[in-house]
Image (cartoon, rainbow, N blue to C red; front, top):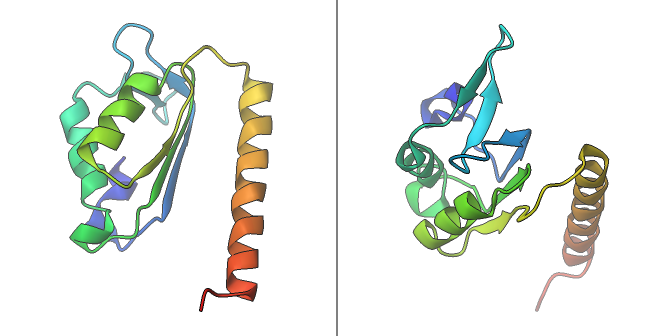
Length: 123
């Protein structure tokens, strides 16, 4: 999460989270370098951090992909707090293979759409 500090110069258009979501709190669970789990405790901090990357704040963030089980509660919160942000999530449990397959198909679709848009810009 520290890498998302806007002062680092990192300005993502898409934030992709692949991992786990706590079944108790519906919050993301990060793995630290030592292997210990670190659950996001405060959704307000996450929302505020992501808001700093939105175009209205000088950022470029247009999509958050939450590729983890049961991330719909957090996704709803992000979409409500940041209208216009595309949020992709899972409402159910999902097998890793299915999540990976969906992510590949999603990004292929996005890439194809962007390539077509650049090849024939709207008049």
